[in-house]
Amino acid sequence: MPDSSAQPATDAPAVDPLALRKALGQFATGVCIVASPPVADEAQPFAITVNSFASVSLDPPMVLWSVQKDSTTYALWLETRQFGISVLAADQAALCDQFAVRGNHAMTDPDAYVLSGNGSPLVRGAVATFDCRVNAIHDAGDHKLILADVLAFASDASREPLIYVRGGVHGSS
Image (cartoon, rainbow, N blue to C red; front, side, top):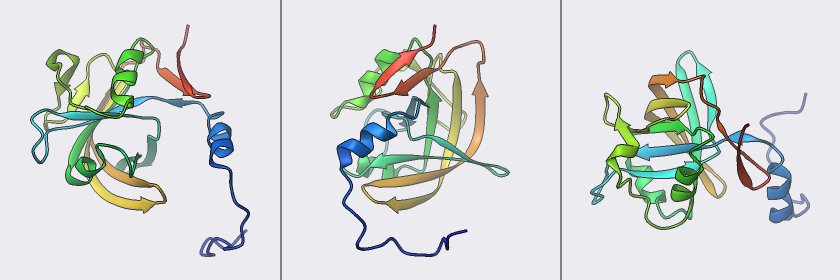
């Protein structure tokens, strides 16, 4: 087994980022909206579309997701201490698109979400929701990994998830 404490080789060959992105795009993932209550000068809850969501631990319950350092909401994610993660359903591609573009990430439609008992926005109709509290934030290249404790969760197995693969979203049918 390789030594996990070894540092990356400084003479490693250069990686073509577009080719790497295309190769990584072969891995199908779910699509999530991560949403926070207002922080700083924000008047509304704000959200971002991610496919970098993962389970970390069942005991204690923990998840993680990552935010790109050049995201327009990057600084806000470093300020918030809580958020909701909503795994989108196959018929929620419009929400995916809304929060995937750069610019305004305010959640201005109060009918599109509910607030958890802790005040985190959770998307209505999602296949699963997780009410989370930030546990730690780690530097990871051009991203930050946000590790969170799961405070509460719910799921609806009767709904099909929205899937992201090869650069696009797909609902199952």
